[in-house]
Image 1 (cartoon, each protein chain N blue to C red):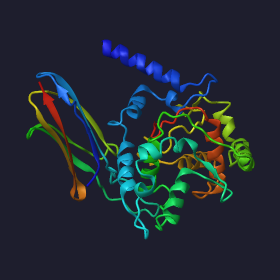
Image 2: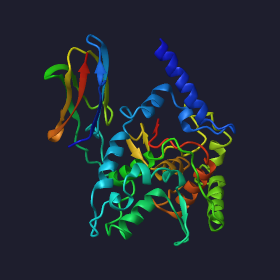
Image 3: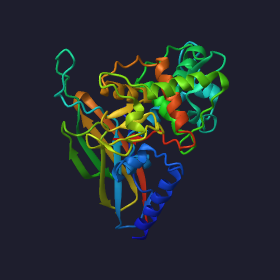
Amino acid sequence: MARAIVKVPARARRGEIIELRAIVGHVMETGFRHTEKGALVPRDIIRQMVCRYNGIEIFRADFHPAVAANPLVVFNTIATESGRIEFTWTGDNGFAASESAPIAVE
Amino acid sequence: MIRRRLASLLLLAVASCAAPPDGRRSGYEFMGPDTRAMQDDDASNPASLWVLDGESLWRARAGAANKACADCHGDAGRSMRGVAARYPAFDSSRGTLLDLDQRINLCRTTRQNASALQPESRELLALSAFIGRQSRGLPIDIAVPREAEPLLEAGRAAFRRRQGQLNLACTQCHDRLAGEKLAGNPIPQAHPTGYPIYRLEWQGLGSLQRRLRNCMIGVRAEPYAYGAPEYVELEYYLMWRSRGMRLETPAVRP
């Protein structure tokens, strides 16, 4: 299982705009590089990242070969209710990672 | 607004702590605000992925002795605090210098009866980043016992020796031209305050020796093999030259 680090505010006011951060360990091999002997290094990238807030999808991103290794994604959402925010990543060669964090909304 | 003002005050405070009165400046101060922010926040610093791996390795049993680092050293937050700020160090029983990676491997081969980790391997970088993280913010404190003086001088001589097809010495860029530009990038003062570093150009974590290798290839000199005494002497001199500056491990650099 790949490593991922997510940052979700532990508490927020209802209706507040909160920032979410997520970083995942991945080489993001583009598929355009060659070895010293000329063989193509096969593509190995994350294809998609999805964020769910209490099971409801609130954010989705498609990744492409130009995305850097260990991609960091930062975005905002509105704090609506207490619960968990879960991030999942899927990609080439069956790559799958997930991480979640709790949030308390008052 | 207040928060932004507070943040800029805080940044000012950090910058003033990092700059000793003698004009030495960490590579951190040559970076843009985005890269600094990336280093300062553990949730944005990609090197945190290696630190977490290092934490697991610290507790994982290895080798024929079936011992983990934690079995002898306990809580790294306590036992490893300040350790990375003292490396490379002179090992008087062996009569040689050891850098942190060599020290980790010595523990592996002699205490854990495990095989040495390969230079620049994910495991070795993870352990040295994890151990280095325990000293973040502490001043670099390199001891030079009498027996190690010739080794420090060898490192100093290497820093000043012209080498490679371009016939350049480290000192020509990093002392005389520090703060100027090389191909549009600022030339830092060569204070290795944050190794192992996450270098954006590498898209990964790397050791000081990997960085030294880059500079040697840059001046068209033949790099030494990883772990060569010439590298460790140069690391020793560079860390001694940075003494008193604060350790930033794991740092982010462009």
